[in-house]
Length: 207
Image (cartoon, rainbow, N blue to C red; front, side, top):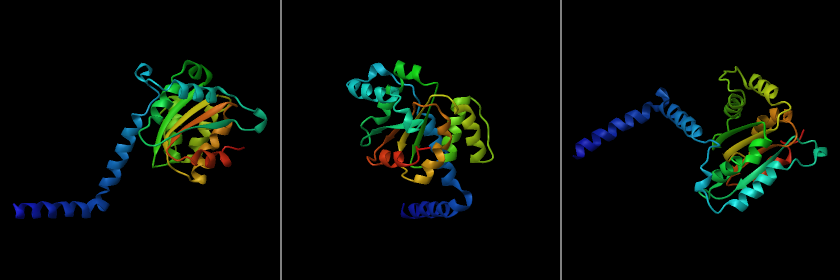
């Protein structure tokens, strides 16, 4: 038995040694991330959720509030903050399922960010969601220019679920096309980081 275990360990070490050449782990992780993201949607069974009506009402009011247009800001962040497992994603779904919210926004889309903040992937997902077109772009600039054309003059709701990144540059790049939206557009962010919404609202959301 000892010889068999040693033989198995030896083979596993050979596989680990070849992982860089074969690029196995990176591709597996990518597929798993993409699979998990597809599971994140606006769809929710509202009747199965109890005890969150006050939270829902407060967030719905934030989404419907147009704000002071003199501040020259076309969109604002609506944060949902809490520890892992408290139901941030569920609350976001519940809020977005509200009829007033559905009627208020012309376009809406959802993206699960997690620990991999990829501006290109997020922008691509948003483009596909608002246009229903599966199109490949050579670079981020062309993608975001196309996105601007579809967002211009529209009231837009974006949900970024499970956000961790605090990078100013990442956020500045991502939100660039959103300035084309009409006033009252909103970005719901679910996150465990209490300071994150304040950091994001400091500069990246201003024209």
